[in-house]
Image (cartoon, rainbow, N blue to C red; front, side):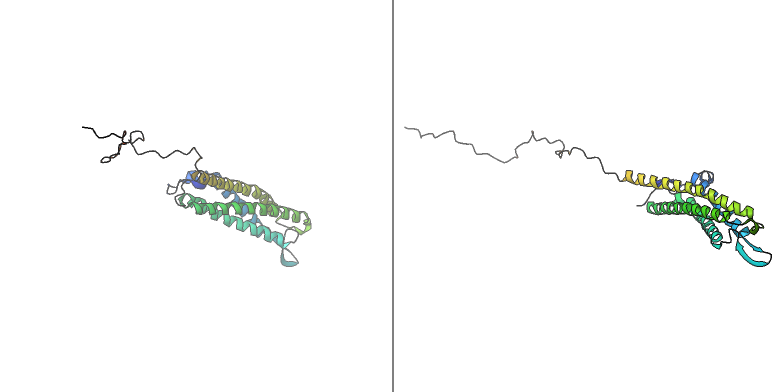
Length: 226
């Protein structure tokens, strides 16, 4: 269906772009915050998440020497940051998309990704916290603050992505309600009979011209007698 102006929580297609109004939108603010949190997490893990002993130059993960913990945190952080950039650009061009079907798929993609990353950030927070609790103090020479920062902002990311999930669901619900209102069936009513031709009534029917009706004889009449 073309011409989906105003569908899925966006303005009509073709309107002028207002930067101030765009930045003040709740989903844009939450997306920027989520990108900053993701950047902090993977920057902390890449910069100070690996260390080595003086006698052993081989690098190991600061989280209980578990390489999977560092890889997991870096992986979801990088992907979350890239996804925030992608959906930020989608938010910019979303009002210019006139096809309602394309808007629907983009909102569904935002909804699904936000829900998945909310869950992955929760898993990441639990994973990093568990591995940090098992890390021995003598194995941490530097990088303890970075490890705690990664855990802290993993926790904050759960709520920021949950907000994105909520906003995406609201946009999807608005689109579904607009679609239902546009295509609602008319309410059933009492059927009305077909109206007659204007200015013609059944009571004023006239006999067509040039027609004669046979008159019934009143009775037999004998011929006259002279």
